[in-house]
Length: 293
Image 1: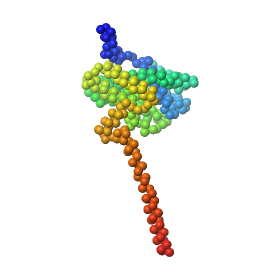
Image 2 (image 1 turned 180 degrees about the vertical axis):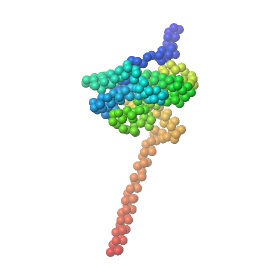
Image 3 (image 1 turned 90 degrees about the vertical axis):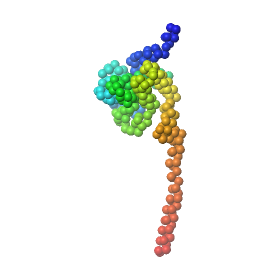
Image 4 (image 1 turned 90 degrees about the horizontal axis):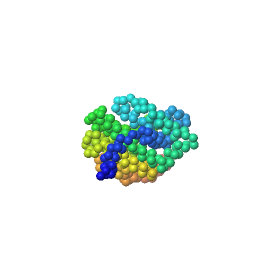
């Protein structure tokens, strides 16, 4: 009985929900975030040309969700920068990834087995940020369920929602990359997670917060590990979203998109009849000219 009590899922979930994020989990979050920044086109050139701009981009990648959530809740957007240890840790990671001799640090953290571990640890932080964002919004707006969802969504999405502003710091303007128009899996999962945590905060979901944190963390970590290992940019929600959007909003199903694209080329066929009519009219004009002569 004692062994079963120790292995109780509720106790484990409770203990897991109280684990501190700093420094191990936050370090993994900063490494993966800045690693993705280095993958962006032109980011290495910006780091050589303007280290200040590169550092600001790195800070947005690490703390963009806090900045945007603080603005939405009426706090100072630079409020999170009072945490000196977090800023210094993120700055150290930025320097090592972009300026370490021979790219040694970058090669180590980009090594796939290491990267899979870091990605999993990052999802622990993401889940905790979503839960914390919903909780803070609940205190500020006790019955503002939509506000809870929005703040939790913003906290989990990270820099994705302000990616266009971050691109401007690197001298790039690509409005077609707006995350709202083309939502990635982490952004979608953050939205769904924010809805779940809001339902739990409103006592409409019959599960404890610690259990929900554990379950959602396992789902996110497993999904991201599989997607990273397969170098996939898809979404586990794709099939469900396709059917739901088709039923509710009349969107085309995934397989029917190609059928919509192919008929678009069909109107090009009448080009030859149009040309023939032009030739006929031109021949008629020539005959009339000969008769006139």
